[in-house]
Length: 100
Image (cartoon, rainbow, N blue to C red):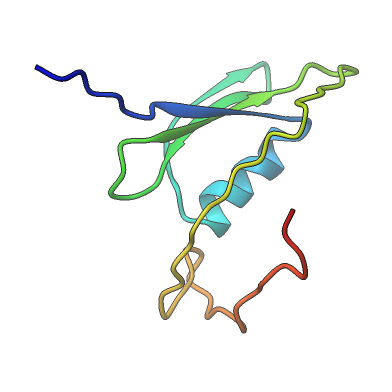
């Protein structure tokens, strides 16, 4: 029997996890699966795209710490419906002026 390999999750470190959570959850519409706080600060959140098993784990970068990833990039394909995840009508599609 052949082995199966599935993508589990991508870990993303962020200085401002609340802002990152807003982007992935509110703007892109990923489902929030779980969230952990330390005192009043969000330090971890796990999200999943509707209809997918793969998740994104957002981790708070420790204050004062720098992260050097060596150029890791994540690419998302987003299909915009009549209304965006936050209920507003989308404007013209945005395409970056250049991709690496």
